[in-house]
Length: 315
Image: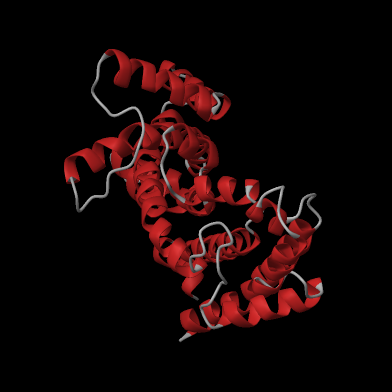
């Protein structure tokens, strides 16, 4: 009961965040130069056609009225109609969210599989060669730009070795093997960067946990160093790691713009860039709203994991 009350309280507190963000995005994008109706119809177009387009998409109404109509529709699951392809925004986003979710899950799996073990090893052997190598990997993973690493991977593994496709997306139901191979390189690009962040947080938390009194007590009882590190220190050190991991996962769900552009993956990131270029207001608003909700859900997932990892929080 206490757990459900806590989660309910968190949801109530997070809802205003999504609302404020939607207001800011709606107002800021209307301040961008350019006329979406003119971008849709072309330069040489009759004024009557422009007026008809503005009336069809509600662009002739005051900005506050446009926002109110959009918000009422969003609450009901209707995010408007795309001016670019005359398609429902909700339907358009549902077709993209699965692609972004696949990329995000694969990237986080790589990040956790690399970053957390390296952080544990570096903390357990602080000051050793293992610590130096792991810290160097973390620094390079954080510092190397995604677009540069992506180009290098394409040249090495697609152009020269021909192991993976250079770009493009194949639905899983059409060809499972090609679909999975197409996600390998972009997942490595995103995963290595996040792995560096997770490694540094894991190492920092583990170094602090290994100096705690309960760890000294566990060692005094004669427990093996492996059991002390993995059973006693790690569980308490995972709290900040979970926080950072869920935040990074939320950012991945919002769309990895550069990576999706390099590998031509039709996810949220690529859709956002195309929609901004074409002044497709409805799609941009829908993308930001869905991305904000996904980020909030990732934050909520972190709160749930806190209770699972640390029993003291349950009381």
